[in-house]
Length: 245
Image (cartoon, rainbow, N blue to C red):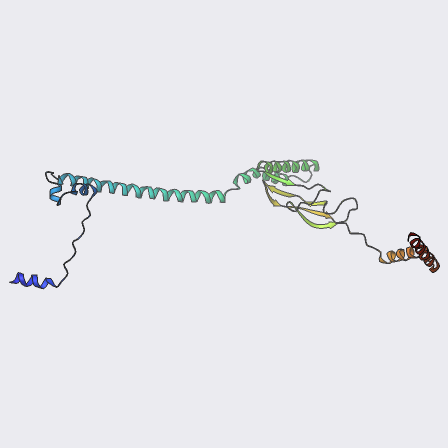
């Protein structure tokens, strides 16, 4: 009776849908044309212990790979830190070779300053020339070029800075009149442009009064035309037209 009641009580309720079991491809292949799983694997013995061993080995491999991944991640992070530190040092001490090349010439200059004032002036001048030539060589070694525009050359605003202008009747406008300060270029970048004076000649002024006077004189020099000449010329033209007719 109880069973009947349970059955009758469940009649009004919708029966739950059976869950869909997703099988591996190998099992699905064996399940073709078979009624159930038992028929599909009939006669086969499943070695549970072997499966457990494979599972344990897979877990060990996973742990090993995870450990290796963490080690590689830590090594890569350390590499990034070292590379960042190297880049910072390279930017901070980029001019170290240049400074080292100048130190010898600074030492020579300091020795020249300690010389007795009674020393021959020519020797002091020779010492300064030695320092100047040494620094010029350092500039050449580090691809630093001196910008010295030639007088009379066309102004190049990419390498020159015009600080003033001057008139020169023998030179065209926008040319170099004089060089006030040399410029310097590092490889293809201008560190300091050369300061120059450019030629700018003033245009000749036009004398308005003189031009008006010349124009009036030209008008006065024109031949006078009499009224009788105009009438005679008109009569002649009429006679020519009548003869044609």
